[in-house]
Length: 343
Ligand code: DAH
Image (cartoon, rainbow, N blue to C red; front, side):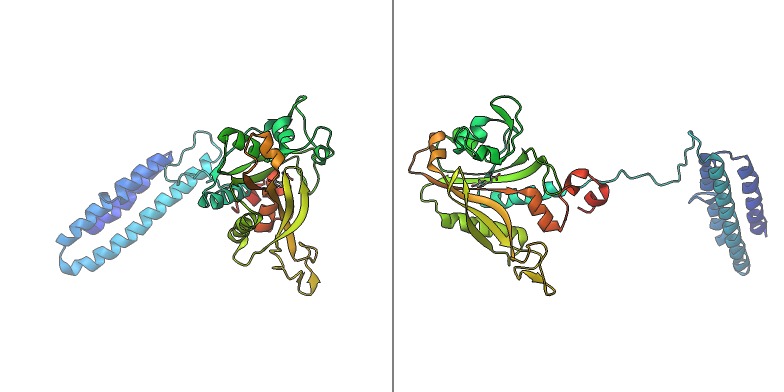
């Protein structure tokens, strides 16, 4: 019964070898030498075939017991060495799986910006971008805000120099796009950061807008309405509707503020018999400003007076809050991983 005694001595051999092993790599070497695919145990098992048939069950049982015993010894030794070396700088355990660097994800604002841009790209609009430090001309004058007009106060502007400011809206991209193209037609969508002297629960000094501009011939308010209706269905679902309310912006005439069906109460104005808290019971939520481009804007950029166009601008944080049910604007700027990791 040579095999049985060889199996028995295998356990003894490993025991004394483990006593000498002072590092985890050494233990790993012993594990491979004894239990590996071409190790000592495997070698003995291979010769089981040559043993007489009546001895095989006993040898097999012994082999299983030895296998259990030596894997237990290896584990015990690893546990001891780990305990000893915990906290040691030069500690290296080759048997531990590697640490994966955490995978990042896109910020919810970026997700919404990308979504809006790709909706308009699908309609043939070109995505454009421009400077955040703007001239008074692009941000105000060319957009029909006369000097000293109170409309300039409407936007609490952060000035860098006399005629240079941080853009208060993305509308200067209307001016830049038309100046660059020199003549119609054009259809552009301009996402970006804007700045205002404002900071409270619902206002941040920096936020994001997306501007849209389409100029051609025979462009009508109906085209604007159809385009925005398409946008809100894409953004908020097939049931979403738009409502236009007359408004005023210096650079559009006529101007409208656009509401979308409240996505919390779905336009009902109430949830569970209570007035909806998000739309305050109206069933509508304001999401953007829009209108037909004012002839004075065409004049400022040298476009023919017989062209026509529409423009719109929306706040991205507001849309992201509605889309993802986020109740506090500040969450977008705090970069708390508990929020960001959910996107
Ligand atoms: N620029 C405006 C704002 O920041 C939003 C806006 C209104 C943009 C009407 C437009 C527009 O293009 O036509 O409040």
